[in-house]
Length: 206
Image 1 (spheres, one colour):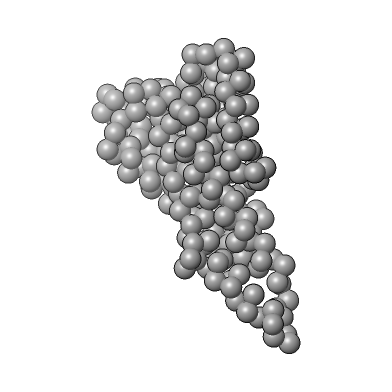
Image 2: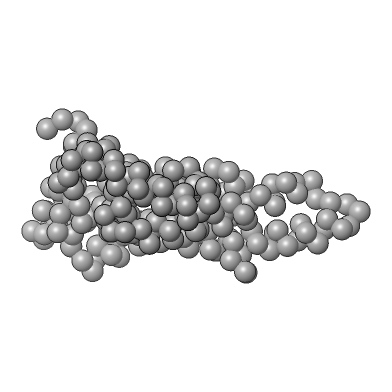
């Protein structure tokens, strides 16, 4: 077994242990998703200084892991492919909720933007206007991005989940799906082009 394929093999072994009733396997599966989720959360929050103060990366991570833990308590994945799809869905839902929480009508970022607009007419504008006005619009892009991924055709979404949300290499993702690398690249390109059109070129860090 080569080093690149170990994560998939380890995930499959955990699933088989979970299917056999090993309670420790469920926790180990969470560990397989943990570091990738941490990197995704940091990617999403890196441009938002205010949001990082409101919601620490580790808090977001814990919320997403709790979602996955709960989901694994309700359903046992059939195989590694099934687990990666489940993990990506929980990650995406948490990141969508994060963006909505801060950009929605009652969200902190949206309200911050409103305060900045109101203060701009006063004689003493806040020192960090540029930072305040940037964040809500970027959070809106992230929210729509994750929702658009959810609406991709199944084959394209599965490839996008494995490469972007789970961080698998193209050879490993192709092997997991049982397709050629050429087919995987075609679906990956199609997904990115579809998202590019839907978001009018606003692809945040894909």
